[in-house]
Image 1 (cartoon, rainbow, N blue to C red):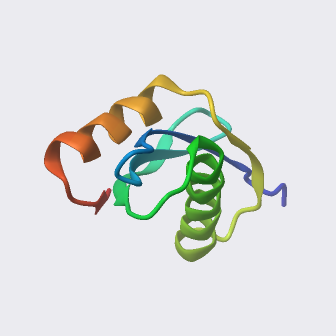
Image 2: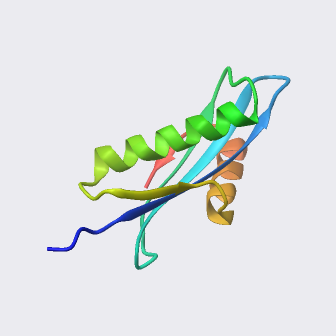
Length: 97
């Protein structure tokens, strides 16, 4: 049986002055069906590179926790993930759907 692959899209925004960052994550299958979305606020983040690395780590961790399928690639260019990061900034809490 052919394995179903997942693609993880991440994006975020950071305030380097406060060290607060918001991330959004979208996990999709190869048919582009959304399997999971999340947004989170992170604290004590040093810079944008650390924020992106933490977002990728969180996305891979969620994929491992919720699914048995292998991950095709984390991707840091997605407008939906960016919208989720902005939602985290506005709501100041985390959620997984």
